[in-house]
Length: 627
Image (cartoon, rainbow, N blue to C red; front, side):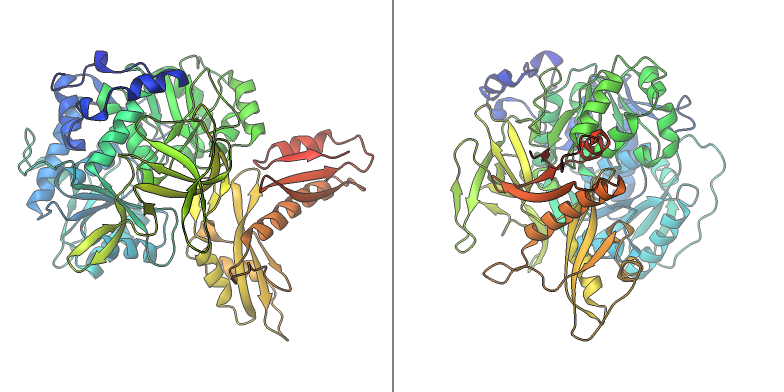
């Protein structure tokens, strides 16, 4: 096989039946590059003049983009990488990136992986959380949105650079802006400058440091909106290159992709940042805020038409909105709208298909698996699954003994904890050892198998049926929320003796946090919702409701039994929908079927339930009428 991967080298991987033939060729024979940098060099060499990125400065300027070729991207990465080397960044040093999306943010992330370790951070986190992540990763340089891109983020970056004594803080300017950049106030002992100015003075044609190896660390990715001690997943170059190859194998070389997820999220970096380098695919970046920009939706279908977008990736709430946006353009190019990160309500699936004529394709994965481990096939959708496992990855269901911790494999079709294996499984969470920062797999990986924390089963065709979560994370609009932070907040109230936070189904966000609390004898607590909202670590964690109960349910070994609380929250949702429609005589209960909750609605002899049916169909939970 040649030094560069040709389109003719790619296997046919269009149907579920193709999986065995793909895996018949060992991964070691696929001629994968050793690092994301080598992958970029291949793309820049093979397709130097081909359009790589179309970067929209904003939704309002959707027809006035910046265009980058693959050689432009390579040159930009060379300049930033060499500038970072000049600032003292070495192979084991982290470069934090704190910014909404721009072309330079993608280039800076790839450059950080080239000379050190990229550490993207969600700019929506609190200042304390950002500081915790910078400390946990030992970040040496911080690349952040400048004052003319996101002033608040820049002020946070300046403050933390000074307090932590970083080597440098570099400002990112907006795309498509030619106006003179404002002066940046200096910080004693810290290099302060505009990223493009610092990069412009660096070598453009080659890398001045030793390229990374496959076993070197490429990135640190924090998982969800964690509170307390940050949890950071470590990715090697081998993890990311293999994941990128698998993702690229799923698509044709001329497929145009829309990128509108934030680059601190592993999906955005892998699916629309690194994987397209394998086949020289064109990616359209939909402005700094992406799907969070309300101005994007009125022009969304025009963007699809203008750039002939064929694939996109988003959470269910995005598709719920798009399912109601009038189609005012030719969207025939769109064939692969991918949905993941949260359960997909059947009503959203049906509405989007009826509105656009295109079926949503579910996928499944996690940061600890480098991105994805199951995908659906356009034209061969199985609505009760999140897709077939992807090549060179293993997925199975196991029973985990609560006492011994022993894993037992479960037969086909039986529900258990999903575990995965293969070359995309991360080496562990970042821990501080005697010799510095190291990845630690303990408690997460057993004999090469990663505990996903999700519940599901695998059928005979190796499709994954996702039925719930063993872990307690609350997923609000695709954003992971650790309930511990909410519980700690409520426990700080002088009247609260116990607290347990769970996700309550929500037709728009998928889930929202609610909290069950017990009170100390002789006390009362008013306005707990407002009290918690003012104190939780992040806005997304603010509970929608706080329910005072006599006692929090426990297991036989004294652990909080959250399934019972989730069932109660589910019943309350349905009761609210019934009450909102004044349906006297209609009642709801929650039962378990194959260990999974299902809502049973008793019609009470009424026949005027069409509106209730439509309302309940908009949720992701299972429900049915009883006779």
